[in-house]
Image (cartoon, rainbow, N blue to C red; front, top):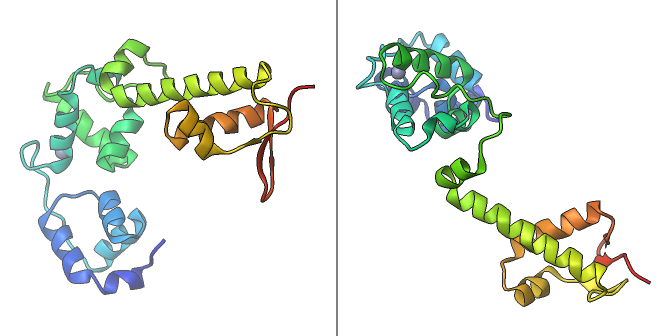
Length: 203
Ligand SMILES: [Zn+2]
């Protein structure tokens, strides 16, 4: 994590951002490669007054929240996902969402979903079609590899090379990698340092 000293080199730009925009501290921190606190401290030390955010047309946070809220099934997007997407801390998130709810610009439920709560798959599919597809591919590849081991098509002691498996299953390496990790947990394969992954099931 960067330091205040690191900010010295970019301070002209940073001061401009602080004085002329309403970009939240956390996001400025990411932009300048330092913590939110470092930006906050810098701002205080220099006595910089940040412009008041005029809700909602000029506030970049509110605009971002409204943009996400317009997506289909937005009530099912977890608060954590929204915070991550907009680079918001808890305080900013609550503050702006509160304003928008009060003004009736977003639904009362939007942003209220806790990340741990389960979202129905059919709704997930519409919000994150790609992610679900990837999860399905991972699952299929894992099942396939597991079957090949259990049925002895991959023999005990046989070396498993991600690239070759990916090629023969006609998928990318990622799902094969994920599948092998899971099979390690199942103790159907073992990983030997500097040697690779081997089948550890069978006669
Ligand atoms: Zn706002």
